[in-house]
Length: 204
Image (cartoon, rainbow, N blue to C red; front, top):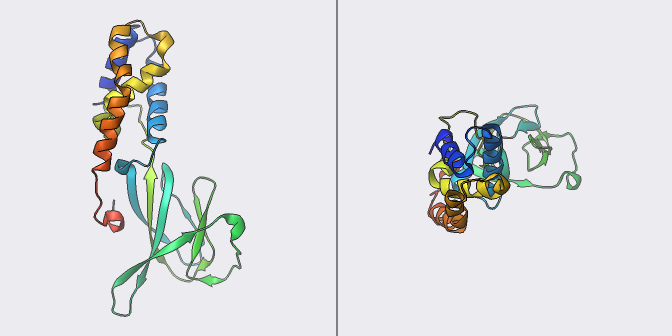
């Protein structure tokens, strides 16, 4: 479904015409965050390549990153191949920063968008960041996403539960609200069926 189609269903259930269109957009975005915050959905699992540049110790985290899983660093083997090494994550207070130059061995997340490494890179290092992302709902009626396509009934029901006091067409609204648990179970079942076959190391 598209954003416009989800809004149409919500308007029908609420029964107040276009009066609450601005509120609908806000509530849809909040419901998406609520649903995606309940677990690490496999459909939201991403992998991004970036470079820790020579003489640098910081890279910018991916946009809309919700949960950082792992950072791997590419090393060239003696045979000329590539070996991916896991860079350990630590708390900032547990890291002794010496300012030395070399290959990073650990990192921490500073704020929401800075990945800080324990050493200054002695050369360019290719990194692969694995993470789960938030869905960024655009204010565009044609916008769609995996949750809109696979979990529309769950999303609609969640929004209606939050807007209960405004609902006039309760007959329609209650059908979606009553099926929230079933809709979420169906989404979880589909999400659990997704497999990745080592695609963490492929370009997203």
